[in-house]
Length: 245
Image (cartoon, rainbow, N blue to C red; front, side, top):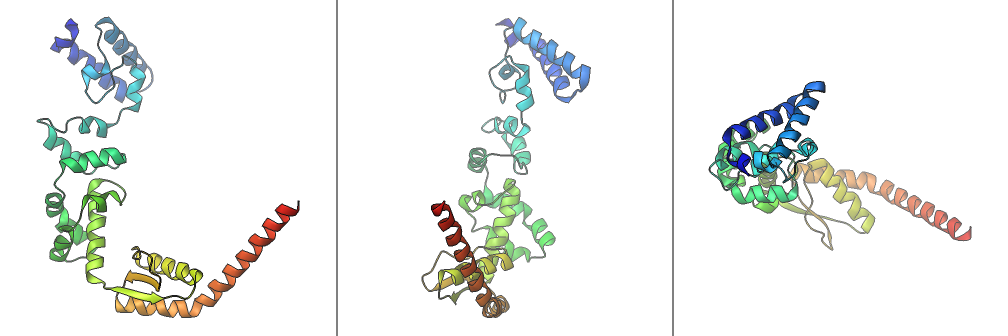
């Protein structure tokens, strides 16, 4: 395939590909037709132009192209560092792609570079946030959402919260009370409660947060019971009507 080793031909093809991606209307259509003809004439595929693209001569595949995929193709090459500088802020990575990125990134080094900015934006102590970030694992990152940098920022703030708020136990008497208190805590704090406990709900709370949760529970648990009973009656009635009919 002489075209594969012809630098001038590859330059022409990549220019047409750029026009197709960035063009509109007739310009885009014309670039697509010319690119398709060039690929067929010289037995090239889109992969020959960019290793992040599939091995196909179907120009429509460019419509499904993502910059992140192109950058991920550079991991393990001399261009890895430049790719990583962009990929850490990419917010369109799939879970497998995020895992691949995590394999190539030093999480703690990234946190060290970003932590002062995060602390300033979130009103947190930089030294404390830096210490919290040092304890983050890849699993903590995968449990969050967004770009790698955004996940790392979230995980660092959550770790700091856990470190500065001791675990507390709020005892509950029934499954309804447990569900009510757990939801109350997680919504008020923005952080998850600890794994289920047979005695009640365990969660990281400050003393004022604990007092607030207890006060709200004492005031509104009777209403939670009433609503749960009403929901159970309505469900039972609906089920009985369905069976009767």
